[in-house]
Image 1 (spheres, rainbow, N blue to C red):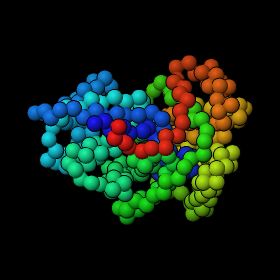
Image 2: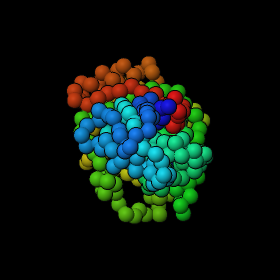
Image 3: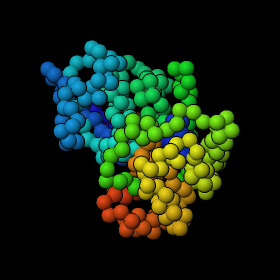
Length: 287
Ligand code: HSE
């Protein structure tokens, strides 16, 4: 049995801590035989534990403490600490591991709520569980969420060759904002979501670039965002935004403009990885 969880991109600009999409990169956990102690075979680097200290096992055991140890193989093409939901994918896989091995029979809503409580916000874990485009709200320990198909487009991921920890990128955010700005921020996010639901990517992309909740405060940590936004305009993308807490930037584009954008981004930064992805329709799956 294999558990497969997609990468995710949170925020989509003004949907801070609320909106996210699933993407076509994956974490896969292959469940092998029962063993004396938990073993995780992986090639993800020496910083990632290969035993029960791994976030995957910790999450699974928190949920189902009596699970019998197994040998697991973990593979992932989701880059770590780049804003593409790598840790959320592990949390979601850990929940699914406990759900399957422990026969917990969890509903999607239970998984989303449990994962959100671990992560603190639902915008990565909800699309990792549900797939596609998810709008969610976490209030008073309750998560309300809606999944909706995302309009067809290419998703170009500009992935810088350095990490940015979410904690560092959240530490630069203000503690408060004015009532007037909160109303403005809400209206921008509302139109972005309505445009996505309407299939109107030119308008959605325009609104994605108008965020006033986080991107401006994070600008100095992600100086490439401004330049990529210029390329997006010049070469016909719908819009660009910081993926989660960064440093990755996503550009949504009609496929006929993908090649021009990729070429410009590669010339701009030889060290960054430029991946052409799509929105993944399925969330966590047993394959
Ligand atoms: N909404 C979160 C943020 C996503 O932007 O900080 C990253 O975990």
